[in-house]
Length: 136
Image (cartoon, rainbow, N blue to C red):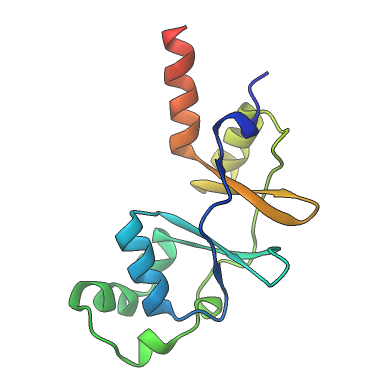
């Protein structure tokens, strides 16, 4: 069985829900991230921010495109993040993680251990595993 642990990104970049939307948007754009886990001081996942969330907030896209600071740039990430977070564990099968992503129509799952974020697995990771299996 292929597990999430084999393909997840360990210790992913994450941000606090109090971080400004402008800062996080620039971070996501600069690092080419599509998903950003939002954590509290104990690294517990309290939300996820995705490109979809940003598309749903047109003002955020304007901030990215124009690179200017506005009242929307002062919004905290916690004001627009998805609070219903579906997560997984490192020992879950990658196939089960893929089923969860498909069922919930999401592109990434935070990987948690003892309620703390330890990684992230994305649909791209699932695709990499599929490609690896085809090469075997």
